[in-house]
Image 1 (cartoon, rainbow over the protein chains, first blue to last red):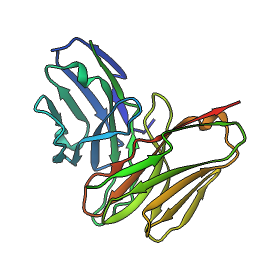
Image 2 (tube, rainbow over the protein chains, first blue to last red; image 1 turned 30 degrees about the vertical axis):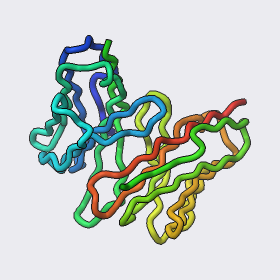
Image 3 (cartoon, rainbow over the protein chains, first blue to last red; image 1 turned 180 degrees about the horizontal axis):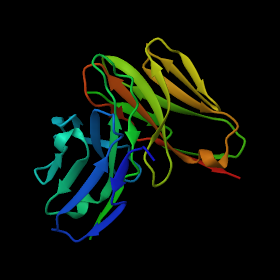
Image 4 (tube, helix red, strand yellow; image 1 turned 90 degrees about the vertical axis):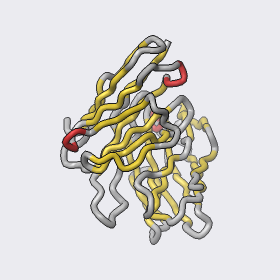
Length: 117
Length: 112
């Protein structure tokens, strides 16, 4: 399977604990995105990378959230001191975006569902 | 502010019937509009892309339209099947933004 993979699929944690999610994009894709999705809503942008550079971070993202993409390959999203409001589906997507081209589709993983108790 | 609004929020139809989902956007400058299908518990999957010069595009039983003047798009599903039950998300990309703007989706339920 050469699609986007995310690990774990499900995570249950207690409030105040730290969690880390991993995303493995399609190997030749230079862009990687993180989104958060709650029930009945569309995906909400969190951050994205062009290769290893983090180019944009949503203002909605508090300092408890951090993402990395070392060497421009896989990415991790860490949430520190989790709160109940962090409970959501965290989606990763990748795309190959060439200069001047905006038509490449996002390829999504199946997400990590986080439940904070 | 770039926004994408979809209607209806949810829709229930009988198997074999047709339906049309709507998307209005204020994203500017416009690059393209995509419709994604998201099955429960899965990530969204691209169905079709519409660029500025395209008015209609079909992908099997799915037909998307775009009116760039009124900034509206529709997704028409013909002869619905139970497997069409999903959320359909309209996503609009701009030429000056690295990220796209997502609508909240229309949840379609097809009943036998």
